[in-house]
Structures are given as C-alpha cells and as structure tokens.
Length: 347
Image 1 (cartoon, one colour):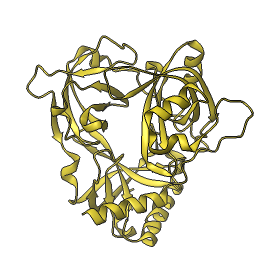
Image 2 (cartoon, helix red, strand yellow):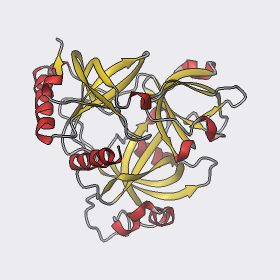
Image 3 (cartoon, helix red, strand yellow):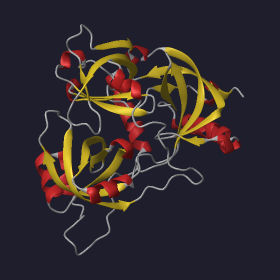
Image 4 (spheres, rainbow, N blue to C red):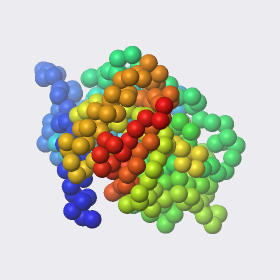
C-alpha cells in the first residue's frame, strides 16, 4: 500500500506545473517573491513577508457576498505542501479589490496575522494587489453561486453535507452545503479527527456570534453525535465501482499541467466528483483523457461553469474501476480505470 501511495504521488506530480510564482522584477520593495522565505512554510518567515514585501499566493476561494476569501500559499516546487489563509479586509479599499478576485488569481497581500482561537491562519489585509488574473476558459463566464447562505442554515440546528476540508488532526473543518462552503469551529477533535474530505455527514451545530461575516458554525457538543458519518469515503477505497454521472472537466490551471476529466455523481443526494485516472500506465491514461476530450468537444455547446470546474449536464458517462482514496485531504476521490474501454458516454 505504501509503495502504491508513493507511486500515486509521483504520477500526480507529473500532472503539475512548477509552483513558483513568476513575478515581474520591480524597484519597489512591495510584491517581491523571495523563494527562500517560503521554504517549509514557516509561519515566522511568512509573517515577515506579509508585513514587508507582501505575501504571494493564489486565491483558493472567493465568495464576495459573504466576504469569505481564502488564499493558498505553496512551498516552492512542492505542490503538496501548502498553507491556507483566511483573508479579512481591513478597509473598503481591500474589500473592493477582493470582490474582484476569482479562483486561481495570483495576489500579493500585505498585512498582519491575527490571533484567533482556530488553527486556521487569518490575515488582516490592509493592501491587496492582483498580480496575475486567472483567465476563465474561453466562452465560460466565472461561476456565480446560487445563494449566499441558505436561510435554513440559520433556522435549523443540523444539516447533511459533505466535508469540504479537514486538517490539523480535525481542528480545521469546512463543510460543503449545496453550492457554498461554511467554516466550522471545532471545540473537541474527538468528533472530527477521523474525518476525510468527501465524507457525507450529519452536522449538528450552533451559529457563532462572532465573526458574523462570513458566518461560522460551531459543533454542538451538547448532543451525543455532533458529527454523524453517513457515508465514509475511506470505505470506498479499493472497492470495485460502476458509477454513472455527468461529464466534468477540470481545465488546465496553475495547479494542473493539462485538462483532467471527472464525473459528477449523486451519492445519497450529495454530489461528489470522481476524477478518472490510470496510475499504472501513462499511455493508457492519455488514451482515457483523449477519449473523454473527444466526448467533451463533441458536446461543448452544452457545457457550463461550475464552482471550480466545467460541467456538461447533457452528457452522462459510465465508468467501471476501483475507487482510490489515499489521503484524508484528497481533493476528490478517484476511479482507477484499466483502459479507455472502461468509460463511455450513455447519450
């Protein structure tokens, strides 16, 4: 299993372009990228960059309506080593700039780390500069969320959703509900330490009074099971699966060397996205990608923007393979296909 895990990481690395931002040289002391300061992502070094020449990273998520902005900073040439920072705009100028950002935008942030009871790092940003706007694939407008925060979140005390992010041994928890993500304060990790990203859970919560934007939830530890796992994605690992769902494309981006294809699958009324991969044979993996690219291109007029992907709701595919989940923080579960014959369009 360890050998397979390492091999999977090596294959993933072959998909990824260099992660060192390319910043134009300037005589100014602002927004200069110093790779040495980002080695091992030591918080003391990153804090110094933040207060002096600016901390440089890419927007991981932006929801202007709720003022929820997250920046991802990566270690040079190590895609798997990264730190996320919640951005809190200090004034109206910072808010105005952040409202213009989109996922993958390269930004330079100046400000200070602030103390908070969560292990999630927060930055009070007093200056934000968009260094390199990310261009949406031609013909696709940026995704717009259907809602800011569903009213039932404030009226109810529980919901069924998907774990969007988990970290620090369960101290960091972000839940997905419909098309939004919601940070959750975890007072006791005994309820969250074994969670995987992608788990479907019933969450019982209280709404924190502060901060009020973005809305933060807190586990309600007065109940027996504040987190009840309904479908643990880790149990899928190694299991043969035949799945049906809509065709999805993750376009080439600063994190991906080329387009990656996936499928949107309804599991217990929760949408999950399974990437379609072959780790054993790169030639066969290319055939899989070429086959899916052909299906995509032949039906491109019906494709639409998703939150961090493109989706074709008019194209249904079926895939047969082995489910693969190798990390608690894995962005999407995978279906390992033997060959391009294991996936095909149903319409």
